[in-house]
Length: 310
Image 1 (spheres, rainbow, N blue to C red):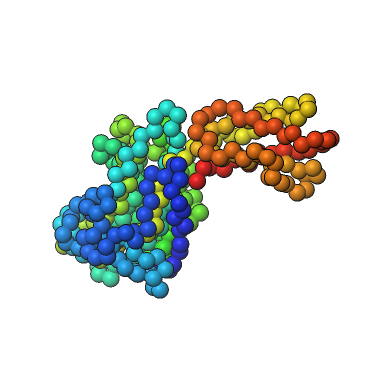
Image 2 (cartoon, rainbow, N blue to C red):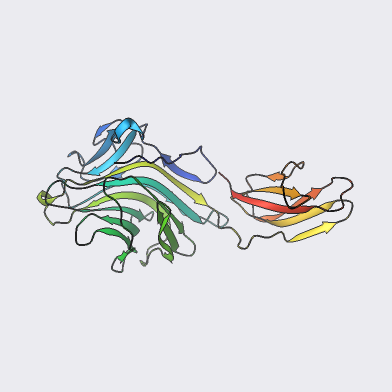
């Protein structure tokens, strides 16, 4: 498999979970039932932790699911997250995960999924990487309807960055693979189950009803990040600007964002060195004001840079 790196940053206010699997012990059956992960088909070596599965050791330790004969035709390893936003909490969940599918060398091929479950264990939705010849590609599941073909394929033996964002309030989600859209703002789950982010699961679904007819294909999982995120006001604009002895700017501040005032006297070069012009880690939705008390101003342009709190 080729090497791709996902930066797993420091703990932030919206971080729900992250792992690069370096704190796991390498070996079969060392993933499920370790560090809060759960799973089935244990003790038969169908999931675990690899050391330097990528040539050159670029990703260090990684997780795997598949390859050997399982004890069930549906195998999963899942991490409980248990995020259900209350009023004022961040409504989005964003997931980034590095993964890859290694093809079978025998006569059978299977599917590998990234599944999302709610806090009571109901499967809400998923993204399926189908390795079978007739249905090869990436499919979207909403828990009820027949799965939707995204029209995008994955490359066997390559590492891909899968990222998706779920709006738990509106029941919509979007996903990308290596920056290529898989789908955008479609219904997340068609089930009647409660919409929350209970568990993130990696799944192996056999193409046969017999475990003896399993493919020796497998999925590699590397750096994974799950974050809650704000839903920003769009369009975002300065709501008022008042001039007197000083200049006062007002704009709508939101939980989960940082704000930085930038100014320019020419509209050519922008600066951010005004005193007390940074507003990091806003925790409450409320108007924010900034005063520019620079003496002798005759003309100045302002803008507010909004970024998600890391």
